[in-house]
Length: 379
Image (tube, rainbow, N blue to C red):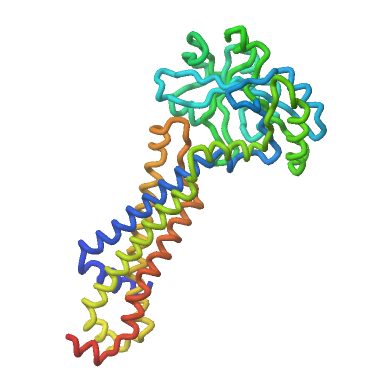
């Protein structure tokens, strides 16, 4: 901090170059922030998956249903603590672009299986009393401006007609990355209006195990129980189930790592070249500094300080811009919750600092090793 004024004076000499250097860091960190946010959106289901939960689906595919009678038989498997079930509703609210996940649930068991979703007891009781009642996540409710008591019409896709619901509750997550975009409706109302072929069928089961260490054994026992039946099952941990969807999209991790590496390597070269030019332009001035008593280490810190200040300023601007844009992306990419956690913000600034140090290291070492006589000879 002692030489901050001197560093700022040096940066103000070439204002255009300084602005462009800061801008390059801002652009790189903005891209970094968006990539991290999108990665988090794709991996959200994996990161928040319950360690004590398993998903049981039809072995053929997720879109094939299972008999509702399987619930009691799954409960009989040793190690199973609780069982809930759900069915994909997939309706349209106002416009096809307004996507959000809609589940037909069993109200009697859902809260016990998903304790991280919090809803006031009075709201839940109202939901239990109203057959046409529904519960929405706070993010979806905020997105559409819904309030308790609102009448919500949803047009069926694979189900005929327009279904109307009364918003009886809004749930919230206990963790920052919990999915609060879901929409829950009651099983009894669904069976009342759905075609006859849906009677007695559910989309999938959510199984809560007593001991997470026994999950694989319990999964094998469930699948064995329904082997060679007309409705064979496929059971896996909730984390593995969520990860399978990410794999279908592709190797997101590799893509982000590749793009990020190219961007930051380019930034390293550009910033290093900029600082090298700045040192060569001030060769005589640096020699004077050494003549009046500035040691080699002080000169090194002066040059390195410029690079670090540019990196931190640009990084802060880029990360702040990415964080501001992420909520807007959530609105554009319906159904995906895109946000930048505090840990990613800190990591971005550390990354910018590291690039700034690496980019300024060689020019700073060159300035430190500069001989006064050689420098003045060049002037």
